Length: 88
Image 1 (cartoon, rainbow, N blue to C red):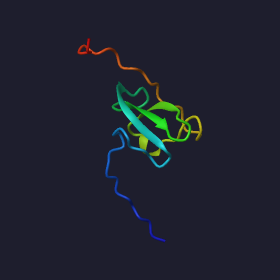
Image 2 (cartoon, rainbow, N blue to C red; image 1 turned 180 degrees about the vertical axis):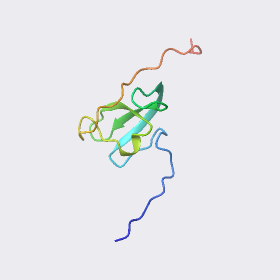
Image 3 (cartoon, rainbow, N blue to C red; image 1 turned 60 degrees about the horizontal axis):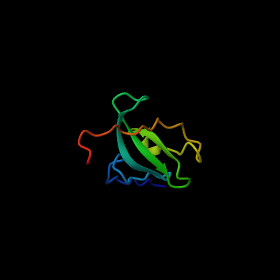
């Protein structure tokens, strides 16, 4: 039996990307990963249970939901601070 490799056409960190386990990238949080130096934390949402959590960029492709799929606990999600250019 031959294996067929599918070329990925979009980056795994692009908002809207969904991995094979139903984990969708919501946004780049802009914060550095606490578990993987040099990576950023991305906000993910599980399609099955809607659980939201953080993951570093290297984990997104094979990530499982921590709540309904038994995946590893996600990274801490933090809200960005106020912008200096916020509308008044």
